[in-house]
Length: 273
Image (cartoon, rainbow, N blue to C red; front, side, top):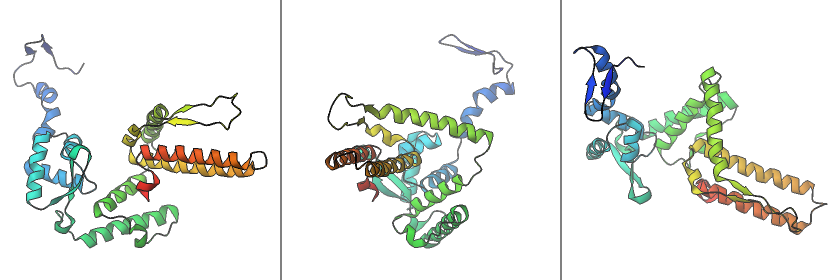
């Protein structure tokens, strides 16, 4: 279908074209040229740009840049020797995570000016888009410049026009895909309707939900907390028809299930306070 006339019998690959036919190099070489022919300096720059907005392990850098992990490991070692990156933290199974070194910025800026510029953009965007008046004090809990730069990037992308046909289709189908994941891992055990006791709804939530995109996780967290608040208001309105001890039991159970849900997606109150 592509126009490349070739055959493979399990042992020999035969190309039925004249030598020098540009069509052959186009279909066989162009796809691998970009990943395999990066210069060392170009690859170092790509690594630095990637980890300047978050912490990454060698394996994650390899997957993001489509470059062999051995080459990434050598590049990271070189950047560490040059003091351009630092060990950020350890992850599961001893994986090492790296970020750029703000005290020796590879992009030639100071730690304070980088933070000031990022804050200026974020604060201005929130005022223009939402009329929300933020100050630098609202970001005191953001510990690193890398995290602040990531917030800036997310805000920047959120401001992008989303009403194109492509993005409407993207949003619709991404919502369907992510909902399938949530539905799979939040199976509900319905109570026995004949039971005289207060019904209990048990959600079988697993830690696999922590692999969902961060912004989607944050939406789930907000939804779960909003659901608890709404349920509390409904119980208050129905206080005359439900015994006080039953209301307390229902709310306690719902809070427990919600906290378990948030813990499994990595966003329980203890981790986000």
